[in-house]
Amino acid sequence: QHNPHFFPNRTGIVHLFEWKFKDIARECETYLSPNGFGGVQVSPINENAIVFKRPWFERYQPISYRIITRSGDENDFRNMVTKCNTVGVRVYVDIVVNHMAAGNGQVNGTGGGTAFIPDKSYPNVPYNETHFHETCAINDYNNAVEVRNCELVGLPDLDQSLEYVRARIVNFMNKLIDFGVAGFRMDAAKHMWPNDLSVIYNRLNNLSNYFATGSRPFIYQEVIDLGGEAVKKTEYISLGAVTEFKFSLEISRAFRGHNELKWLKSWGVKWGLLPSKYSLVFVDNHDNQRNGAGGSEILTYKFPKMYVMAVAFMLAHPYGTPRIMSSFFFDFIDQGPPANVSTEEIISPKILSNGTCTNGWVCEHRWTEIVGMIGFRNRVRGEAIANWWDNDNNAIAFCRGNKGFVVFNNEPDDLQLTFNTCLSRGNYCDVISGRKSGNICTGQQISVNEKGKSVIRIKAQSVVAVHSGAKI
Ligand code: ARE
Ligand code: CA
Image 1 (tube, rainbow, N blue to C red):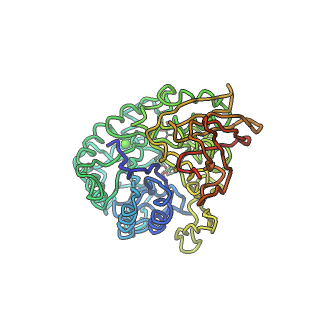
Image 2: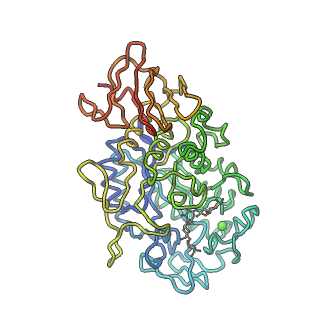
């Protein structure tokens, strides 16, 4: 359950946060597949509570396991999964089963269902109060029992030790597996007992016929462990991968200039990160781009220069399974996705002729630098880091075998030096400032001599990356 099942020569999971299924299907066909992305993570797909002003977080308040949200219905979801798989892009679903919706009285769902919260009654599952833990609040993260059996921000807490609850969860997840999903993000896994999760995961079907016979679903569990709490990320790694929030924090700190880049030479387990195969990595996610774990250190689209460097490093370095955040613009924390003010329908991203998005969507995954580094990662797969170089401060460079070379300059001034690129003689397109288009580079061109050397100029706070797939 640690294998993401990417198609060959593909990598990276793009979180198309709050996108509609129809738009995701089109994105798989027209952009993600042709550009080598491995898969997409979709926002929770099951019926959720309609919360006043439609904040993004309402998707984390389940009303039932029927597939119907502002992203679309079951039919839209199935079509999307089929289309994405057909063009070689996998689908991972965000699964919210630690809890159900909160509220004061009756709450309405996105599929026309209702719940009556004071009785913990969710008739469209159905769940009643016997399926939940006693009401208590999580205040003390040093108490594992409280973290697992009390309520996360007041959300009624399901008891996954009960056979009835396990069966509801397994049935929901198996239905999605049979539709063709490749795996799941397990929301709030920290708040569920590893043993209960183990029973649930073991009852999941093998993946559908889009996958090799006997394939198990990829599972990545949301366990925020920055140290110093009762629940440890290592409790979950035998069950599946874990979201490595320490990666997000440390990489953000480094590229913010709060820790010299030269230290990244030992990036990986020496930094207290999980072994690579257990580690789902990202610069920011939908929570910490707003607040929460890591807080103000976390780099996001709001700091484009530093953000691009951090994402480029994540993709250039072989550690972990990378996830790219694809956001909508927001001014305040609770702000929901772009939507029609009267119908509250989500507005589709519009793609401009230069390939970037508008209508309120950031589409980080379409930034030249980020998609260029997806191409880099695919090209250098299996090649070790070689020829590490640094200036003893905030400029670093390395090769990936003899297939790729990358240099990061987080100094206040431009840098010009002769580098050993490990590449064969020829001209290469920098995939950060542009791309290879036919026989020309739309950005900077890098000439490598017969000794593998090249004089490269790297602007302050930027990256240059070349690989054998972008040779002209
Ligand atoms: C909303 C309101 C609350 C209200 C509640 C119930 O904001 O004020 O009480 O509804 O009415 C998301 C939002 C929440 C939102 C919730 C439900 O972030 O604000 O509550 O949806 O709509 C902990 C958990 C971790 C969790 C984070 C947010 O361990 O699992 O808190 N992350 C996931 C998702 C979230 C989602 C949920 C879980 C709930 O990614 O998007 O919440 O499904 C330290 C600890 C961490 C802790 C963190 C909190 O770092 O180590 O464990 O994370 O602090 O910042
Ligand atoms: Ca719980």
